[in-house]
Length: 108
Image (cartoon, rainbow, N blue to C red; front, side):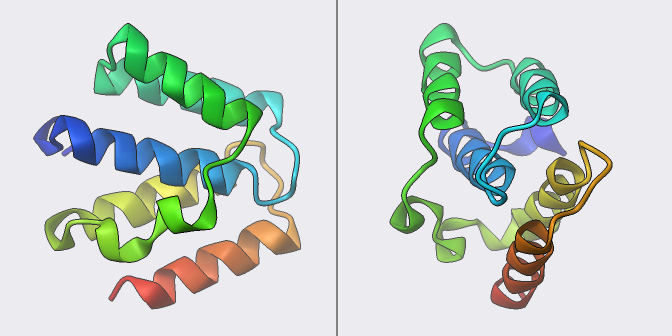
């Protein structure tokens, strides 16, 4: 399903992934590894990868991760991916759980 995303949609997905990785205010090694694997799966170009690396240093702003920007056809994919990043470090902090629940409510 990842291969059906356009370039813009892939970067929107990565913004959300990085935002969710920041939910507990600290990027775990396992979350970085998850992001790196996803970058490879999405076949992001060097400039896109650089942008993702930047989001791992400074999270995207809240207005950059507006759930309304997620294409309806890809909402399940985004939700599945957010669940994966939240569980990447085998520990779900309350902030991560809260973000995930809110995200689920915002994308019907």
